Image (cartoon, rainbow, N blue to C red; front, side, top):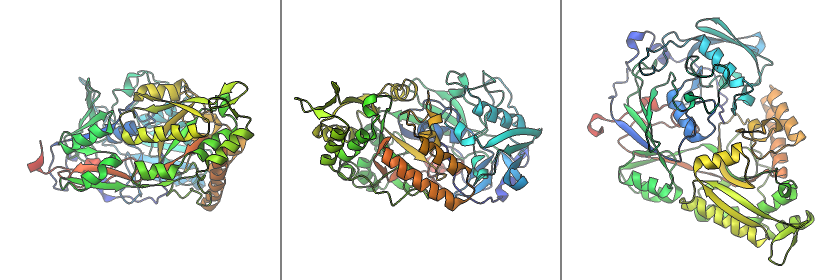
Length: 538
């Protein structure tokens, strides 16, 4: 899910540094070029394009390969990227972007680099909004009426209606018109999703047999050549091994450090531990296609049955906050008046009884001859102690109130296909990462039910749909806040997820990496400015 914060437009002088192709490879900061950065990810990316991707591992890589019309700086302010300037007319219904004329697409082997033009912007929007393109972005851009090419370097977007912070939404990543095999819509079968070309600071070199993604610097990047020569994304199926890899210098950075490793890394002078406030939370999600889970009293019983604070304290060293609803804590939309459901196993049993369940001789709740026995699918977490403990604790808590939970730990892609494509599960465990636009429409609006869509649990509630639409239509920020507070309250009551907690995130990296600034939810937005001193390059 891609969101951008509420910010004010600022035009930076740095945009003029690459005003001519002759200067494309130069930066004026005097920091050295060279070296490689090996970084560890817990899992591997499913796709590498910015349209079909819906996991953070993939989206972090797209941040290195692609650009948007606008970007965001370290002060969370909107800055020019592929568009060097813009005009807003007709009371906020018309946005005209004047594009840079010195940008080239990454060249494919044996081909010359092709120039970036307005055709690519129009093409990206058309592909993104095509009915047969499955993307979580579609619902985010339904407010656009049309896009028109004015000339090769000017493009105009006409909106159906003025919306709050529309400019921030034009951060969507632009893809090349010549890049796709299918020129009408994009599927995960298109070669482009595994071999993308963009305009960004890094170019895809190859994907190894071990699924390492190797990116190399774009010598002709319009902002100037990025300092570090190579980024290598290394996937790990075991967080403990990933932590050891950093300790033994096999990798240089971990994007998200396992909480168990934080004290050890903090005590080692070779590493920097940098907290970043990603707007995120973890949850257990219900598949409402299962008739046993349709009754919200059953779902609510699951939340009453588990001691979330005890799990947070025991498994994550208390480094987090219990949450009550669908918005990320710290977001302006989060409703602090809605308190998290307390741990109350007696209340859980009462709700199950109200829903028509009784305990059989084995102590399992059943109704109309069907046991309340459910599978729980968890991605690549079998070797992650913290996640494994959360899942086993969940199973034990539910067993005490008469619910049989059968955990199944799956390889990442198998899990994604079962959850997003086949919807073959009863419960699932995952996390969402947001920006602060507080757009949860792709998660909970009924129009987002379907293959590879984010409302994989098939949650449908007319009142929720109405509030989501109302929040999008209002131009009054305080009114939107009020609507989202109602939305929070309603979704908390419906309990399509058992909302768990938000954790304090840490990146851990070798101190040889310099000028490291981390974007709170995109991570690599500023990575073209990172560097490694010559003496520590290898």
